[in-house]
Amino acid sequence: MSQAMKEMVRQHMECDEQLNRVEAALHRRDMPSAGRNFRLFSEQLDHHFMLEEDRLFPAFEKATGMSNGPTVVMRSEHADIRQLRDEAYAAIEAEQIDEALAAIDTLNVLIQQHNVKEENILYPMCGGSIPHLMSVLGMGGCGGACSCAEAAKLETV
Image (cartoon, rainbow, N blue to C red; front, side, top):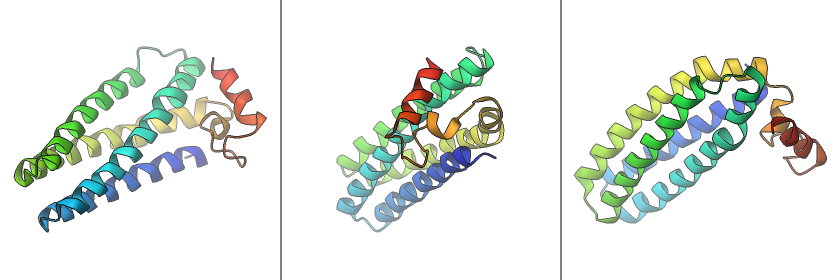
């Protein structure tokens, strides 16, 4: 697996760990910690989805010509995950611990199933078909701030 795809997998693991912190806080009935950790999870998830939807998926579609392939499924699953995330957050904000735990349990299952597909199917396909993948994702040595990242973005348009 390419270095860029390993980084995307690492982001999956970070999101999983953050969601586990939320669940642990809910079991302790520590609502301030649950809310704080959920907001961090949500930020991590949004950042990861943005990388995929705005950079990785378009680059994959351009490189392979597959505009009705796995990226369509992944975008649809992202929408489902976002909806369930919002339901879980509403339950946390309302201090409905049982409802929040149930939503998070379902969210965990959905995310794990989604990640398996990305990590075992889509990411290997991306790593083998997208040139300059680190730059496309803004993960080059420059952190995406230099001209190499801008050039890679132009290649995907």
